Amino acid sequence: MALETLPLLTDRYQRRIENLRISVTDRCDLRCFYCMPEDVEWLPRKALMSFEEIERVARLAVAAGTRRLRLTGGEPLLRKDLPRLISKLAAIPGLQDLALTSNATQLERLAPSLVQAGLRRVNVSLDSLDAENFHSLTRRDVHAQVMAGIDAADAAGLRPLSINCVVVRDRNDHEAVDFARLARERGFDVRFIEFMPLEHGSHWGTDVMVPGKELLERIGEVFPLQPDPDQDPHAPSRDWVFADGAPGSVGFIDSVTEPFCSMCNRIRLTADGKIRTCLFSLREHDLLGAVRAGADDEAVTDLLHAAVATKEKKHHITDGMYVKPDRTMSQIGG
Ligand code: SAM
Ligand code: SF4
Image (cartoon, rainbow, N blue to C red; front, side, top):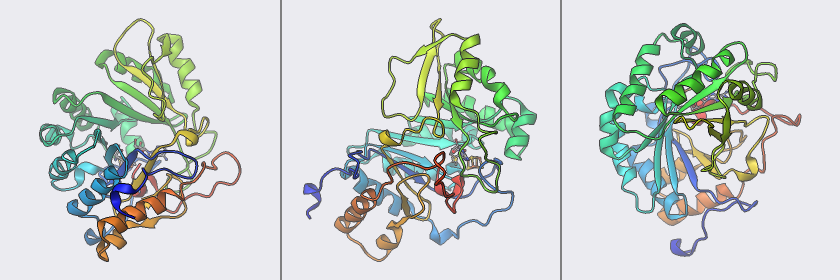
């Protein structure tokens, strides 16, 4: 079929795929206990998609209807020359949003060049406001460096600035109100993420997963909240603003207790070029293999459509049918 006559990327359940998350590396300088083991074998360099390969796939995905790209990893800022990739992607016609998810360890150094390359906003992962607790959760003693990275992103105008916090009972749930205070003081959008069973080892359980509803109640008792009038219906988080008009917001990504699968409009591309149609997919589609075997633009687009056609209806975390994927979040590209 000629490219221009292909329908937009839409799956069997009429979900239009508008978001593509691209992992640019599986490497990371932190070892968040819920994401990675201490010792990891990295993908060989040649297994990673080159910037040219990433740009080509992204351009074809945008031509097929994707509107938003987000770079992730591993830690995306560990990929050498990332601003060069950002400027290639920012120039794709039809792209509406280009964002990055980062642990912020390298942001102090890189924020200005990322902005110059065309990045507009960033999500920073931060699980504790306390240096010691941060060290215990991430197994690295770099809290000050991360906070300096957040300040640099803010100063460089990377806004809105979202802070993603994975909440684990008895490890950091006692900090929820402090995070809400940070949101108010700095005008940040803090998003609390339910811990998902995608970790290395077996740390997950319903006993350590803190439902977003519980955090909403705890925060609302201290800082009254009201639903965000600008809520994006397709966003995975349910967002709340402060009733007293303070800046910033809090949001809850309740992937386990309130799955948003029926609204999910994203697919993922792993650092080694595999399409995953769901975080929890048990199968992948080898796009990079096809690209390197010489697939032309039409064939790559067909492969994107074929992958999207297999997108899973929903995840099975809570219905007893859950099978944990072989890859952890850092390898999938969260
Ligand atoms: N290194 C970058 C970072 O931490 O922002 C990008 C990759 S990281 C895999 C992307 C997001 O996935 C982070 O916000 C992280 O907290 C989240 N994540 C990792 N493992 C998770 C899990 N088991 N459950 C919920 N979120 C998880
Ligand atoms: Fe690294 Fe991000 Fe995973 Fe933490 S969550 S280990 S920063 S990839």
